[in-house]
Image (cartoon, rainbow, N blue to C red; front, side, top):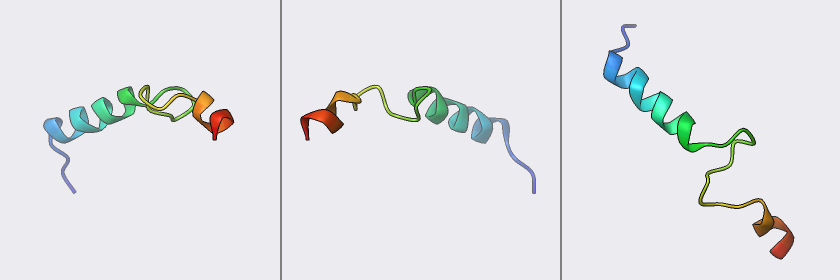
Length: 35
């Protein structure tokens, strides 16, 4: 299977949105405590 450079960049962008805890910056960890 051949992966195009654009595909790799897309994945990198998705991973970049995720924090070290695999949580999106929009979703704060405090939400769990609030809920």
